[in-house]
Amino acid sequence: MTPTGAQMLFFDDDSEFCDTDRPGFRRRVITGAGSQLCFWRIAGGATGSFMHNHPDHEQLGIILRGKLDFRIGDEDTDERTILGVGDVYRAEKGVWHGDSVFIGDDDYGECWILDVFSPPRDDLRAAD
Image 1 (cartoon, rainbow, N blue to C red):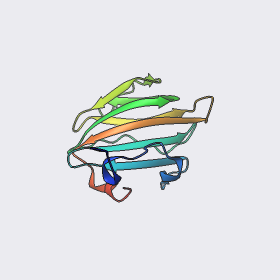
Image 2 (cartoon, rainbow, N blue to C red):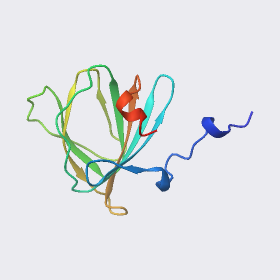
Image 3 (tube, one colour):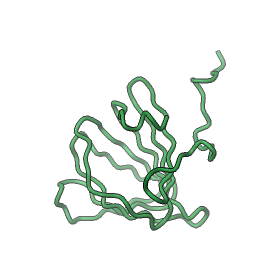
Image 4 (spheres, rainbow, N blue to C red):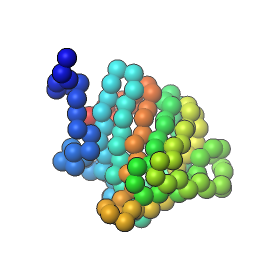
């Protein structure tokens, strides 16, 4: 059976990315029944990331381009972690993360991150 319409999407289609209320942040969101993909394209040096958690959602993320320098763990942790291409982070329900520095790659000057949320976040459904 050949996938059609709703079963197959070209995820990295630049025209499908939407600007957000944070300068330098663009995203594409695809929501399924039990999980959600959020593909971020963030300009190197962009600001606007703050410490936060998702009490009802697990979040997994993989760095596809550039680097992510951020904090993850306790709300008041000062320890920073730097992740590069292919590195994965996991923020289980309620785990604090953020205060990020986005380091752009040499080709696009962007940090690309693919986040997976389970269950899907209602606040991201509008971006679908």
